[in-house]
Length: 166
Image (tube, rainbow, N blue to C red):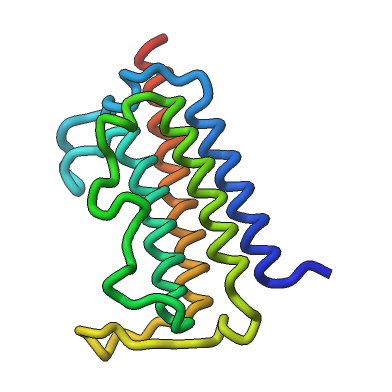
């Protein structure tokens, strides 16, 4: 019988496969492309590469926040895979971004492998905003949810890129 952590790993694997599909066969210029520069609702759209890079980086951030909740990491060490540099010129190459996604998948597995079922209920307050209380489980689920959202954005943006190129 699959455990809760096994389910999280499986879902992350599925999401990483979807991310890889978005990047497969993509031209480098597509990563810098945005469907529109302005909108009456929430302004400009994001670049395809930024959407992907943010999804990846925030997954690491949220899983490290889960480690904080479980008492395995100091809050000052909670960050994405590159700190504040989510999207850099290194990500202008789809192959390099695919490799980054592969590494983050492995990192996510390593982070999830470190949790015990009992730690999933652990909770900790934000060190500067004590009214914000996080649980390990919520941070993991939020990582999955947030990555899913950005994969959906990336899939739609990839479709729009293909349409404007046709």
